[in-house]
Length: 453
Image (cartoon, rainbow, N blue to C red):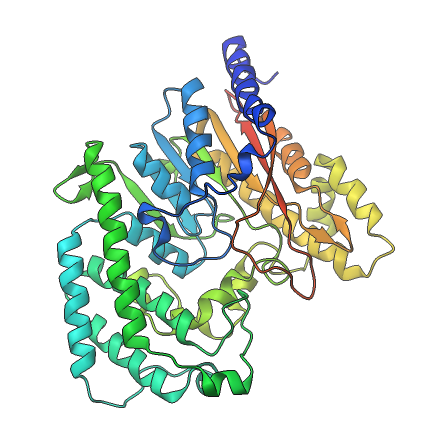
């Protein structure tokens, strides 16, 4: 056993027993059916496939009970920031990253500062300015804008955009951009029943009443209250000083396949939910983000945000795991060697169309590229919690949980526990034209080796 002490082995055994006992007491415990609420800062914006806060909270507390030294948390696929917010409520330092600028905007907003009175005043100023703006100028231009927005919506969104740009505080602008992003989602001509860009029927567009200014007002004022509730909870725990969270939080716009800076290698725990497969055939985070990002000043999100990400509806998804299906035998062979389960699954796909195999291989290749960097974030003996979905390809369930466990074990990590959960409330498209949506997830808990292999 790779430099793992008997004390650590016993501690992991006790943790696994405790987490499994919750499932024995209630087979549906990890579903949090009827208990999944997006309270506090969790509900600022609808985002694809958000994790259940109560599940994340329970996992963190359970792990910390048996590992009381945990002080710094990481999420290398930060998404909507559920792990960030729950980590803050437990007083942890945090590091996270994501390739999607919309996710980074949302998470940086959730991290504060929490000057909620200033945010309320900013909302009032923006609404007043937008209401007084009589210009019919449309301030953004992109391909098919008239397809996705009727003219009056373009005009009103432009008025809101101009008013937000006039705000002097970056943190206030970020908060307002989040509200505008949700407004764009609800007032565009794209259906809200799916995260893919699907145009509404002509008659529905013609008859549908949209009110961007009113929608923005409702969302922004609601979000002020939600951030205020989070601020109050943090303050009651002694975690807010002069409107700012007391612990260090860093959120980067970055690809987890890219190497981490050495100074980040001090996290005690990583808790994350990577994509279930390539975004094109599972959850299209990039398509979902495309329209909102057109209306947001990208430089307010991050100085390195590249406008080329919006050159088409597929650019962000193409940058995501499995976005490029070009794989070489030189790279694929060692991965199959490390994961016999992957090798066996690919063999089962040999009689299927070739693109089925290439989808799985490309995604696992890219996930495997992330693993050295995720491990580099963790101190020796750091713990990992992976929330995984075993999506279907060619009618077969991809055993991603077992594949990932084997790839991590090949890098010296040890298995702690595997838990199953149904996902009755996770906000995902019911189906798409390629793959069935998963109705269950796996919680995989692993521990990094105590010493470098």
